[in-house]
Amino acid sequence: MPVTQTTREQMLDVVPSSKSWMDEHGDEMPADATFDDYYKSYFDWRMARPLPGKGQPKTKDTKTMSVANELAPTTNPNVVSASERYSDERPLAKNAITGEHIMHKGELLRLPSQRMLARVGAWYKSVCNHHADVLQESGYDVPRINEEDKQLLGDLYAKGRWTGTKADGTFGENLTREQMGLPTKTIINDATSGGDTTVPVDLDSIAVITPLVNGELYPFITRRSTNRDSVRTHSVTTPSVIWGTAEGSQISLLDTDDFFAEIDADVEKMSIACTWGIDLESDSALDIGGTVAEVLGDRVREQLDYVICLGNGTTQPEGFLTASGTTSVSCAGGAGAAPSVTDTENLAKAINKALRTPDSVYVMNDTSYWRYRGVAIGATDTRRVFGMATSGHSSYRLIDFPVRINNSITNPVHAFIALKRYVVWERSGMEIVIESGGKELRRKSERMLVLRKRLAGKLLIPSACAKITDGQA
Image (cartoon, rainbow, N blue to C red; front, side, top):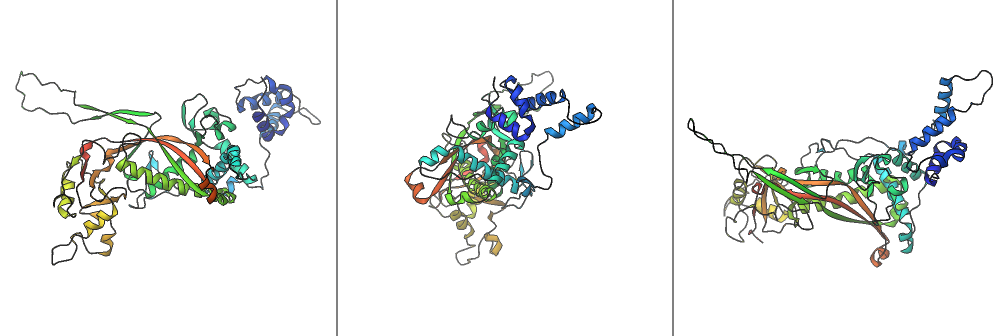
């Protein structure tokens, strides 16, 4: 079975002296042989041949050292690689609302490093190049990959981690290219689906940093991972306790029919379209990576906050305002009445005290919040019930709880919810599609990057949410 052209080129790039071995024995390697297999075969072949030199024959240890040095990539110690030019420092991230550090997947979240952003920028250019036929048909130039981009890509393919579809069709998360079982061409060009289903972990990480740092709701819900297309789990109710059972009397058996509640949530696909001027692609990989992180993060943040509130439960995760079983509270002043202090109290006390934990918040749009803040002490006393301090109005708090804003909510709707009772299950990885066609994109000289991410969401305990739906319009 002949060695693939990709393997031959990479072998010669890393170990130029392997050419003679490749010519003699390359065709003998099995089709599924890894790069390590090629290196080992070359190493054994090299060890079996006498090394050039004069005088006494070299010892085995000396020979091994010589071969090891020969196998190492040829580098100039005075030359800094493209990746090393960028800082790998990742400062700890803090939530913009609370100022606290953020936990994500069991560890403190860190902001992306310059090296991560540069790699993502170079990877974006490579994706454009592998969609070159589509771009050129639309009359656009393909971004040029320069020498620095090649070095960044080489570092990404050699040392980077990947998430997405493996060679055997199963899902892989945070794996090396070899563990994914995919050659370079497969990783950066998936012709089957029309999108790239295996992406760098760097990109997947960047996509959630902005929502976690700047999101109103997403940072405060419960986040879990899944590698399936649906979530099947259960919630457990509180068991009953029986006191005063007489001696010799039979103890009542626990009825488990209502003890376990089944929870079903389908993993839905979220498509995020980001556009920017094509002139951007002539910038450095770092600038491109920063732009991708910014526009992608903002769109993910916006959509996650939306579905947590208002997801329809059919093509989107079910939001807590559309979930069934939540507690309805009537507006204290009657349907259509202005917000009042009593409304805030009724919403909060509608949730059982055991669920009314410190993560509980009011959720409404900005107009409704300022209406609440404008409630006066009395008809002749215009001082505000919720305080007159300058910082008080911008604190986004009512009575003892924070207020989270989502301007997709209509004016009459206000809610109070224990946010940790809402769970989002995220499936790692994304699909990528590059789009440049269409009159509108051509006219504006823009490119569109469409990213598809999968997730499910559910309010596990409906009674953890109370809502008013008949407030002031």
